[in-house]
Length: 552
Ligand SMILES: Cc1ncc(COP(=O)(O)O)c(C=O)c1O
Image 1 (cartoon, rainbow, N blue to C red):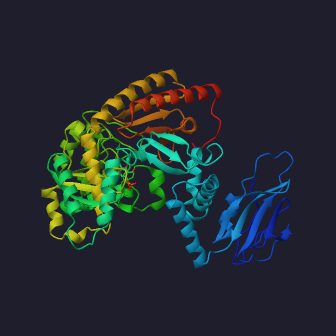
Image 2: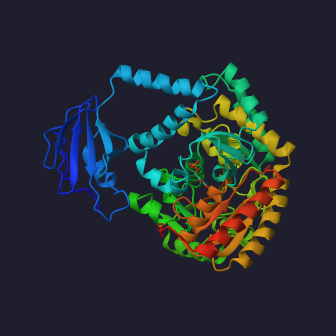
Image 3: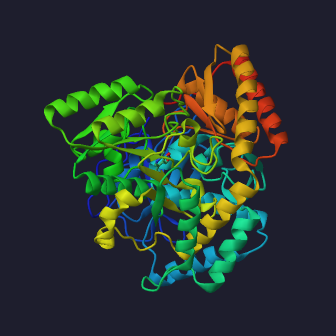
């Protein structure tokens, strides 16, 4: 049952109904009013406690703040859940805005925590409480609902605190084996010593760029990438996020071809800024922002005939297409691998119709699928390639788009038609150079092939055993997807693994497919632990059924 309130005007008036109370307290938490009817305007610094007297048979605490929060207005922030007496439960809000001095003091408190080597249990608990409150009050609040397995963990919500290799520790010291790899940012593991050292050393010299002098590390990283990239891809540009790489690739393709249109794939994912979002193959992300770029078309992933048919139609109606944009293995769609003849045919078709092939390796690059770049599995050279995530070695944000000299020539006339302040900064490039070094030295692509094959074989056996729950297992290298019969089952598996100390996740808003993307250098012993815990979890779900109801 939700509390009945009417929107608060500037005076912030709450209305309490028959079994809901509004208790207003002053700064010292002394009760100054307890009302069943409308209170007068609430003054700054007063505490507002919205209480609820549960009915006799009502065991669960009512979800009151969902309705209430939107109505309280700015700077009315949730402090904590409270219990007022035996029959009154509620949530306390404080109606206040910090003074500059209070903001200064609070920032110092946080700095003390950042700089403190060992925190007391009390401080740890305060950090947990504060994190939930702060995200709820100030951050992208709906986000808490999507982190259920984390916020519902045992006694305290799991607040990430430190990581090393494949182990993440929360603030209470609970350990999790990382099988999510930050959706592809930790190919080299967390805090790889060589990458951390490079960044720390660079930090002592120069963190960001002057914006005027020439940057040695940009050049160095560009050289390494140019030497590694497939075929004639040799020129590059650095930015920070995957979406930035896709935006740059789209602009370059338009500049080179003089055409405006793009073809993308159903369920494809390329980022969420307006250009890359226009390529988004999932309705739920794009619909709220329509109209996006025009002249964008979609074909099913993995079907070259469909691409050709679409291009034939578009040619007939004169829709100028600049490029086909595609992931080598669809990541956010749940590790979907195309048939082996797909990319060689795609390459032929793009050439035949005179359009560019843009391959988005943001998630698949840097060894993830068993090759440095996944497109190399099919010996295909794209016209433009996008990189991100693990390019920064799991230490710095870094992304890039690359192309051939022939195509890049269009950018030479005025290199500032595309520029950025932070892209290719010294710290990020130091991390990128070290990431390439680690990837090659530790033969991460080869490790991904071996470990991926082992996991796929073992997971197929588990799937056969639990067919009622698990539909399929697929992937390439260490980009693996496990499909469950329902979203609820997937969620229960993720939550069950989490309880058993293993971190995995579904796609962003669905748990029906769970992605397995550990660090490529994950110790073999953890693969065994993962398989054991997964079986344990499935066994329990098989026996007890699905408990919660989660969004389908
Ligand atoms: C293939 C692909 N392209 C682009 C992006 C967007 O990257 P970012 O979130 O860094 O903008 C992602 C993110 O998951 C991705 O998987």
